[in-house]
Image (cartoon, rainbow, N blue to C red; front, side, top):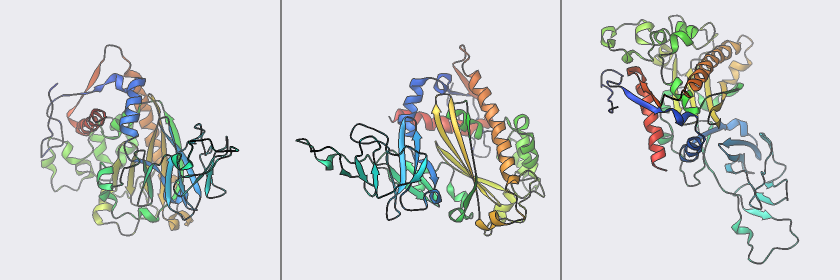
Length: 389
């Protein structure tokens, strides 16, 4: 199929475009290639900074078959290393999270010890050092760390330099007015879905599925019920310029304030949001391949992807609020949490149906429709990373 363009005044593909090959969503060799070329060379969301609030606190995480430990050293500086002893490879930290007893990472197998500030090998337990052995040659393998507005990001490329300008693919400026640094986690939800990580991102970036899959969301965000994400996704959008009808121009339904079961922010909207922020009702920042952040008038939601295999992906969702909102007796966080979980579970069902159908032997690849212009960009991004390997 020929390449396609996006018209300047209408967000749509003007020609049919082939999607990625179906085998890329379940082939184990392809998955391994993507883990190496994309996930191990990109900035990946690790956690909120306040989840590592105390010196010597740590968290472990997996990126494909790579196990990483992220921690605060004795001075409170963020560090990250491959969670592997240089002796014979044992995992150092065995729990998901915890706090070290000292400024040393100590291997539970043979008790080699590493300094948390730079990963240098501080001590071995052999009775003598063999000829030709130098502890300076066996530090932990470092992992790059970046912190952005209270979010900890890591990159397995030890030489990578954190830059939000290149790490984000949907501009983080969308969240400029949200007090992201000052927010605290009010709820965390984890669930594993049986689909490839790319299937999730494809679903996230189109709304052709919205009317049937998300009827409640379509009531809250009326434009979604038209199978489009924004006004300019419709060929006749110019006819609606000047309208304030959310069905035609986007935003929450009239009278709604946030993404919640009843559309109410319960009197706890963020200070500092602009009239545009409040009218729009929601906004996103995206950092491929691992995370999107949604800003709403009373909370921020961070959704992290963790690939578990070619056809399995874990979602970890965190809801962030001001401390004052969480402590307020008149605020019920289930109003926003339950609504988002409902939407995500609806998406999971759709993604799993998509994944199962991709195995149809005669079908080599699908085709993108005009409204799926963001999917084309996603597919180009995937291909570019694989070509650069």
